[in-house]
Image 1: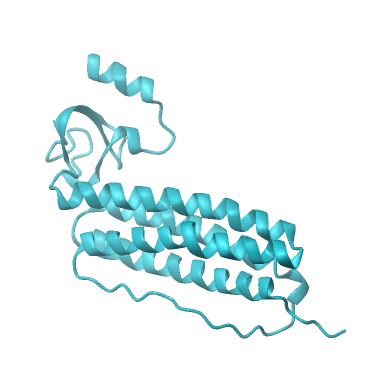
Image 2: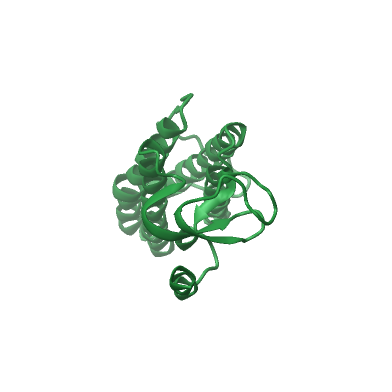
Length: 206
C-alpha cells in the first residue's frame, strides 16, 4: 500500500525534529550553566529539555501510519551558540515564543485543513506549553541580567535545590547552612516544583 504523506505528516516530522533539537540545545545549555556554577539554571534547562523530549514523543507517535517510510522535510532550525548564559536564555525564550505564537498555530491550522483533528489539537496544546517555557526562560534571563538571580527587592523564601532548606530574606545565602552547597543551588521557592505558596507565606511571617 502506497503511503502519501499530507502536509500535516511533514509538519509532525518538522515538529519532531525541532523538539529533538531543542532538547539537545537545552541539555548543552545545562552543561554550560553547571560550568558557571549556576546550578539552578542547569535544573531549569534540564527540566525543560525533558518536556521537549515528551513533546517529540507525542509528535512521533502521531506519525504511526507513516511507519516504515522516510519523510523528507525542509525547515529552518536555530543555531544559538553564545558564551553568555543571558544570551542563551534570550535565544531560548525567542525560539519558544516562535513555536507558541507562529509555528504550531500554523501547523494546527494546516492539520484542520487536512482533517487531522488529533494533530491539530496537539499542536494547539503544545503551543500553550511552549508559551510557558518562553515566559520561564524570560523570567530567569531578567533576573540573571539584572543581577537578581539570588537577590530580591522584598523578603521572599529561597529553597536549596539540593536539600530543600528554606531561607527567608532578600538574598539567598552564600552557602546552604544544611548541606553546605553554594548559592548557585538556591531558587525562589515559589518557582520550585511540587510546592505550596501558603507554606512560603507562613515561612516569611515566621
